Amino acid sequence: MIAENQFFFKDAIRNIEVTIKREDLIHPFVCGNKFRKLKYNLLAAKAENKKTILTFGGAFSNHIAAVAYAGKANGFKTIGIIRGEELFDKVSDNPTLQWARDCGMQLEFVTRSDYQSKNITAFEDQLSDIYIIPEGGTNALAIKGCEEILTKSDAQFDYICCSIGTGGTISGLINSVLPHQKILGFPALKGYFLRDEIRNFVENSNWDLINDYHFGGYGKVTSDLVLFMNGFFGRNQILLDPIYTAKMVFGVMDLIQKDYFPEHSKILMIHTGGIQGIKGMNIKLQNKQLPLIDV
Ligand SMILES: *Cc1c(COP(=O)(O)O)cnc(C)c1O
Image (cartoon, rainbow, N blue to C red; front, side, top):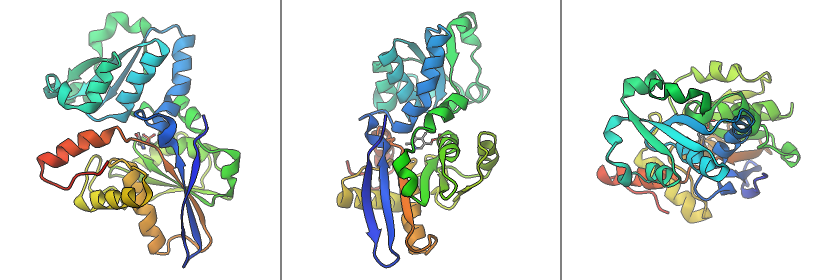
């Protein structure tokens, strides 16, 4: 699985070139990095003769959508433990959950505290058949999958930029980066605990986190961000997702303007996908009478 690199633009003043790796095109609905994170987990589940994959996620989770689809495509039963009991009778209003159910995923809605404690006692008698994947899909095998994002021809880039949720994707990138390159991660959530989390998975040190572009925290979206996304889509015909990639791309563009990158830098931005979340976000934005994301 190799994603295409698309030249994006050149800043003529600073001689900076920006390219986008289109991991989002790996599948029309399921986002690229979630596929990569599942690859070796699916192989492990098969090798262990497991029949069912169980995982966790929120109402708009790209990971839930990816597991539901991958389970269907690979002959596994899937169970999604979903945060929020109140969503129980609202599946048809939620494009992500509806997609998961259409793929055959069994959805179990739990309270926030049961979700927090990852309480799965309800499945105790089936555990020998179940392969468990953590929230967001990040574990050692997921990181191994993300080590396949960069290819030999990406050696030409000086900076590789990606969005961060749980830190799995960036850990894979860091493990496969070359000594002359630097990985910049843009957390989609507030907080610095990520740095320690990532350190557990990597040895290279040529990476850094840019914490200024979370737009208020995980899942938070401002009108400025939506207007940026719409301008970007209008000019480039590339959709960004509001939770992750839009925040990273906004950050990279802003940092170029602020002369963060040295002249003649070659930057690669990883478009990790997440497009399936736009529909659900637009329903939320509409309820708040805020500008909608163009599609
Ligand atoms: C999950 C996700 C990320 C973050 O990946 P992590 O491995 O959790 O850091 C980035 N972009 C998109 C579109 C995602 O769905």
